Image 1 (tube, rainbow, N blue to C red):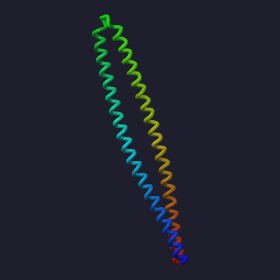
Image 2: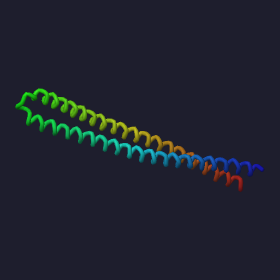
Image 3: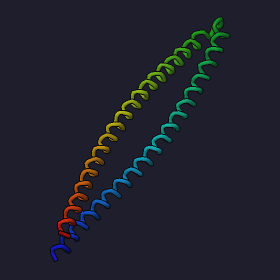
Length: 145
């Protein structure tokens, strides 16, 4: 009866460890899927940003071409204001790019920290599993003895 109780206790611990391992695998799959989604979102954002940049660049080229032909006319001041506006837009775009690069760096660091924490959790769970398995082996050996 004592050996049966020990066996049940060890079996319960093994089942618990298997459940922990299963949850850990599910968490890994979820994180991989989340990483894929983030990657796709980043690509879409980059593509949209590139399209905005190309539209603004095209507008800048048009305005500059127009300004070259209209500099000698009475519309010089209006064109100059547009050039200044486009330059301001370009400056804001460059600031936005710098901000996005910084944000990307922060995200990368956060991802690394999360991965490190996850690795530490995994190693702790792995260590617990090894301890439980060793305990189970000694308990079984003791029970047989």
